[in-house]
Length: 71
Image (cartoon, rainbow, N blue to C red; front, top):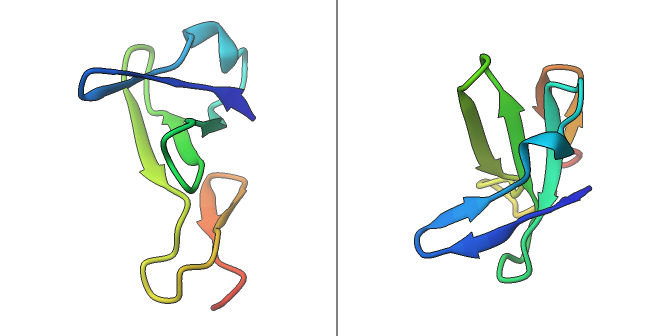
């Protein structure tokens, strides 16, 4: 896990927190679930909440995808 912080309407994570990895789980104090942050390119990132929208379970990263233990 890496730490993130809220800055207005954005969540900020130090780029160095990813290191050589293409993803990280980000804990943000105001969020109930961690975020899954994925590097898509040198300057492009995506982030999703690790909560399954069907059953509310916490999904886990597995290689380049997320896996839900409830499905």
